[in-house]
Image 1: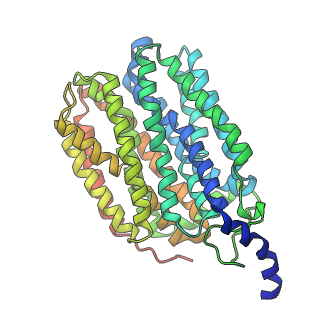
Image 2 (image 1 turned 45 degrees about the vertical axis):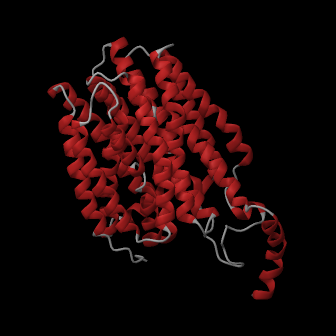
Image 3 (image 1 turned 90 degrees about the vertical axis):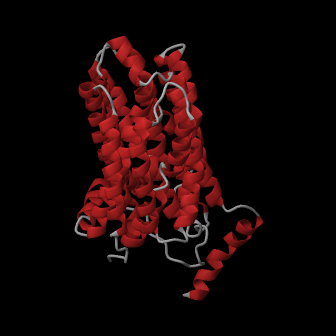
Length: 428
């Protein structure tokens, strides 16, 4: 066995030593693809006020479209992970970017609220859900054995980088030329990434005669998926749902989504505007969150390779909950130092939860880890969708967002306790 294996591995050893491993190039392409799709994640908070002004739609109506997007963003993820196993990352991600471009571009023609639900909610929800964080987890599982936590953190930070790049530009476009130009900018960014994905992304190391970074010679790697991708995703869910860690991870991640994408990502700008702050200024604050999110998420990935991931999750959720309870007292017409402190702190914690959650899914569920994370991520987006609607209705009926901030803070403290209760011995 050894003698027959060694000659087959020998030719790839030389090229790997002469330069960076091909896995780093694949990770770079994945980073650009996630960054290109992240433009839409920055859009809802910027466009709520312009859409209310032009069409007369309530905050709750616009928030419903955001919620449909968030739900599909999450529910598509586990099926996308299975589809990537079956048909390859390149095909799935390229199609996802085209869906994002179509959905964002078609919004410029809408005249009724159901158009917003279709283009902004369904098209873009399916597109972003087909890559997002489950794409990052799949890249890491296939191409890396060493540095998995670090690379997960870097790819997760791509979403924050996209927010940093796009948010101020989108806010300027919405405030000046108009919200339609912001939608066109997102569509163009998604289309621009498609050629890079199609020409440079490779599905597995074996496709180009190499091995995953850090893999031992002759180490057995999971075979490409076969059969019906949807049935596999559902079968994995059935197995995971019979275990306690799955529900603790899913419950905590639902609260994570509610307190980030659903609440702060969607409603921070209109909430700041309620207190007299100009929308470009509020958008700039969210962009600063993106800056510090990059540092926080990469650091979290590095720490996930060294510290018990459940301890990291408990710390992140607990600190986030306390900060949200302070936020209502910080809003003002101008950017005060206390608000800047919140923005920096919250940015460091924004998606720092992702690397330890991915690590726990991998440790507990083994080869099914990426698909299980897809289902856990689905709960993240269900929580985000619920928070987006609930906060919008809170604003419509109470005239302020305060109750939404306090409730999210309390839920984050609950998530901290749930995370610390996880036992992560492999289940099978």
